[in-house]
Image (cartoon, rainbow over all chains, first blue to last red; front, side):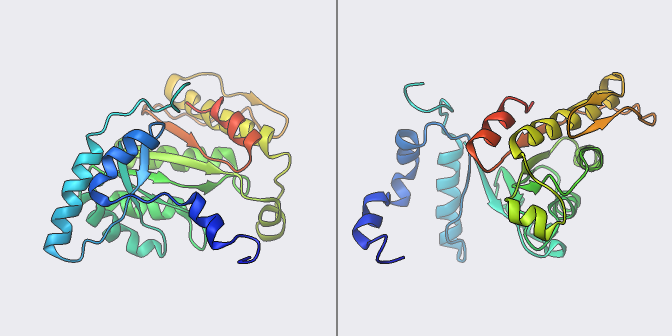
Length: 70
Length: 172
């Protein structure tokens, strides 16, 4: 498999975004989505607070729900 | 945007997992169906929570009767006061035939009828419509009285483009 799909091939498909920029990423690249699974570390109070803040920002997003251009 | 988290695995732990997800303010929890029954998991989750949405992702359709699944989904919807959405999946040929001992093909028209019959069952219960669905793969013409009313949503997920397309034209 590693010979068929190289590391460079994978890098072409990978989309990288920092958590803090996640809402903007969704707005720009997942405009068709209405639901999504979500997971990030929540082991400590600080992690839970950060996750809670990010979740709130994502949950407030209002997206068209269809692919851009349709 | 609604955010969800998975609560798969042992159904006995589904209640606590769903309760924690509700406490963390997720909008919904979902569970697949691999080693354990998705409807049972969602029943346990529903009993342990009061506001979070419950979504199967997915319940394997073809090993089940549409009538039995419509009844289970109806009861779960009643029990959770409208928080339940059922996601249906077709699974692949090998699993349907060699694991579940049933048949799958042709998956797309069969899935379409499966959903149509579930909706017909709910229409009979909700709106007292005539107990009748006459399809190629599924049919029913008999129903015992049930006068309760609820709002049922059916979300369908399926593998394969034709199956998904047909499912989308059939779901409510």
